Every structure is written in C-alpha cells, then in structure tokens.
Picture 1: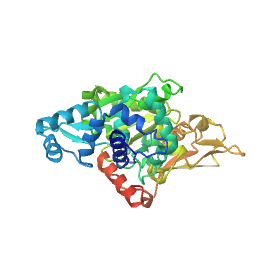
Picture 2: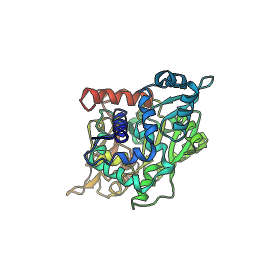
Picture 3: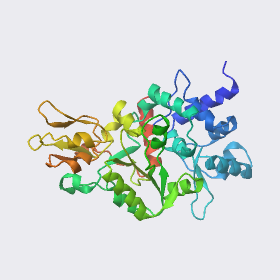
Picture 4: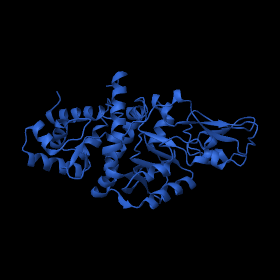
Length: 362
C-alpha cells in the first residue's frame, strides 16, 4: 500500500516523465532522491495542479487550483526562486511561469545545490534508465554546431548554426557554472578551473541572473567564451531551436549530454548535427592529431594507419580544424536528413513529447 506522501512523489515523477525527453521510472526508485531533495510534498502537490506546455500567471493558477490570487502568486514566486519552475517577467505584464523538464530545467536550475546524497542516485538513475531517454525522444534537446564556418565545405553553414551569429541575435547574456563539470568533479573525475562556460540568453539569462545561478555578461564576453572553447578543443552545443536560448561547450570526459549520445544513442542522434564528416583516405598521413584532439574520443587509426571516425561523431569540426593535411571536412547533410528546427526550446520540448506519445513512450 503506497502512503499519500509516496504517492504524490510518484505522481510528480510521472509528471516530469511527461515533460521533454522524460524522467524514467525505475524498479529501484533511485529517481526519487532528486525529487525529494527539492520538492516538499506540498511543492509536489502544487506542481501537479499547474498546467503543462504553456506559460501561465498567478491568476491562471488561482483559477485552476481554487486559491486566492495572492496565495497563488506567493506559491509560484517561491517555487520559481528555488528553481522548481521557470519564471519570466514580460514587460507590462504580470510574471509568467512554466513547468520545465528535469533537464534542461530543474537539474540546471539547482546547480548551486549539487550534493553527493542525491547526485549519486542521479548517476545510478542515468545508468538504469534515464540515460536511454536523452536521445530516445526522436529529436535532441541539444545539437552540436560547427566550431566555425571554415570547417564546413564551401563555408556552407546553415542558418542558426553559426554560434557567434546566434549569440548576436540576443540582447541579454549570462554565464553559469557548468553542472557537468561540477558533477564530474564530485564523482572523482578531473577538475576544471574553467567552470563558467554555460551561456544563456534573454529571458533564460534573466532567470539565471535573478536566481543567482548565473552572472550577467556582455555580448563580447559571450563571444570570447565560445572562442576560448573552440581553441580548447570542445564541442559547441546549443539548444535545438532557432532561438538557441542555451549554448555550452564540453567534451565526453565531462558532458552528460555527450555521454548519453555515445553510450546510449537513440533515434534523436540522427539530428544531433546538420553535418556529416567526410574523410579523405588519400590525404590522410596517419599522424594521429585528430585522434588526440577528438572531444568525443570517436577517432581511431586503422591497420592501414588511416584515421577513421565512428558513428559517435557529432560533427563538431575539431578534427577538421586540427588536421595538417586537410584530409577532413564537414559537409551539410541532404535536405531529406535535416529536420526543421523548432522555434523555441519550449516548442522543442512539446515536439519531443508528441513524438514520444506517437512511439508509445508516454
């Protein structure tokens, strides 16, 4: 018999599993560690009352829940300040709120509160079932973009794939510590002094700044961070949307997203990039530079001393940039293999959910 407290957490888990790429149930129950750390039973009940897949104001929540508007506003403000739900403040309107998935959402919004007690359970959850969901939704929530235009044949970079140009489309900029670097270090992996590497823009940036999980920076600082990442040999990833509300740079050693792509895969990996890597066997001299520099650890030398990338290549372009013999180049995929980007990250989540429903995942 499930008691009422445990029952509300099961319902909360199921609600998160219905958002974005999901939050899978397990036999062991390890998924509840994260939820119980941040949600009280009352918080869970409140979230279960809130509408999905839309922005809503305190007035809307009051009408749904039967509470007075002042009480509804207090609940929403408190939960958003604790990173349990998202908040934006449109000019001339009351604050708007939205339920977000665990990732990108609850997980990143609590990067200042990473603790061994729940993090260890989170790693177990990732290995048991959650990791399979990250690229199992049909489309990814992050995609990789070329490190710069020159690594693509004829500089044929698609709209929304030029990282610096995408940054320039925004007006508010913030940088936050990378939660992958924080958790990697906590798990005994290599430490990285360059923690502030995750960029967020506009209303997402305002939320990060106001909640104290990111600091405001300039356009020039944001561009410099991406250029530094390029020089350090990292994969540049952005939200899978035309708006590119989030942009980060990492490698397989630290990045949970890249680990999910490599070790679990899924249908969404077909859309992880708009490009594919072409390797010229005649030009390759087997120097091994690309093997050492690949941030996905996806390149090996064959028996004939020819460099070959495996299926886990995310077309970041780092090997192209480093090859001394110009034996590698990114080429835009055929139009039939390119899926139109959702307009916003929120649209991406909704599209993910629809694809998961169609495939029987939810």
